Amino acid sequence: MSEKTSTRGFWLPLFALLVSVVVLVLVLDAFVGNPPAETAIQVQAVAGEGTIVLGDRRQLNAVAGQNLLPGVELHTASGGRVALFWAGFDVRLDENTRVTLNNDHIELASGQLYVSNRDRRITRRRVVIKTPQALISDTGTQFKVRFEAGRTRASVRQGSIVVKTPVAEHRVDAADAKPATVVISPGSTVQPLAEESDWTWIYAVARPFKTEGSTVFHLLRWSTNESGRTLVFADDNVGVAARNARFDKSFTVDARDPDSAVVDALATTRFQARRQNDGSLLVSLRGS
Image 1 (cartoon, rainbow, N blue to C red):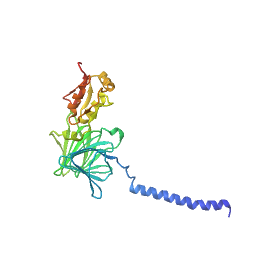
Image 2: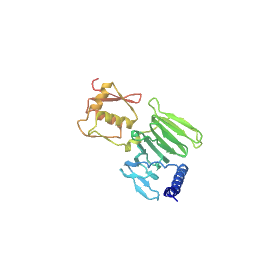
Image 3: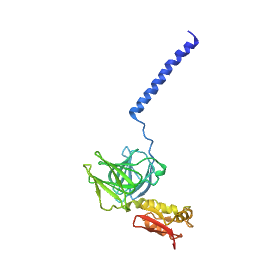
Image 4: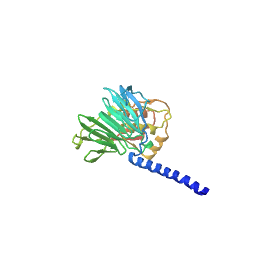
C-alpha cells in the first residue's frame, strides 16, 4: 500500500466523524433553539420594604445596587416600592406587587408595575409583561400594568403598547396629552376605560437629578422623562442655549414632583418653563 493511500485512509474516517458531529450539533440547535443572552437586572432604588425570593425559596431584602439573575421573584410590601433596571428598561413596582423577573419577560402575579424605555438607546429589545389574561409589550413608550381581582388593566401615557390575548391583538395609543387605558377581562375581552389613571406613585422610587456637571437641557430631559410630558422650546435659539448652559451651583433636584421641581431648579437660571394644556413643557428665556 502506498503512503498516499495510507494517508487517505486515515483522514476519511476522521472527516466523516467531524461531519457527523457538525450535523448532530445543527440538529440539536434546531430542536432546542438558541438560548437568549442573559438579561441584565439590577435593583436601582427601594422605598419601604421589598423582598427577593430566590429559586430555592430563600428570601433577601431588596437593596439598591443588587444584581439579580433571571428567574427570581420580587415582592413589595404595603408601602414598599422598588425601581429596577431590566434589559435597559426602567421598571418600577408599586406596593403589594409580586413579579417574576424572567430572561425574556416579566410576569406580573399581582399588583402594579410601570415601564419606561428612557434607556432604550442601549438596547434593541422589547419588554413584555405577562399576566393571566394577556401579554403587553411596548413600541417605545411609558406604560403601566395592573393585575387584580382577575382583571388586567394597562395604561399608556407616551407612545403605544400592544395587548395580545389568546383571541386577538390590540394596539393602544396615547393621544391628546391623555393616557389611554384598557381593561382585559378573564374572558380576554379588551375594553377602553375612560377614567383617569394615577401615575404619582412612580415618583417614590424615581432617581433624583444632580446638577453637577449637567446642562439645563439635561435637567429638562430628566423632568419630561419622569413626568411623561413633551419638551418644547420657544424657538431653536432657546434649545441651543439650553444645551450649552451649565449650572453654576451643584444641588440635587427632588424627583417626587418633577413638574414643580424643574420650575424651582430653573429659578437659578435665565430659563423658565410653563406646563401647557397639550401636555408639553414649554421652555423660553425670561423676559421673552
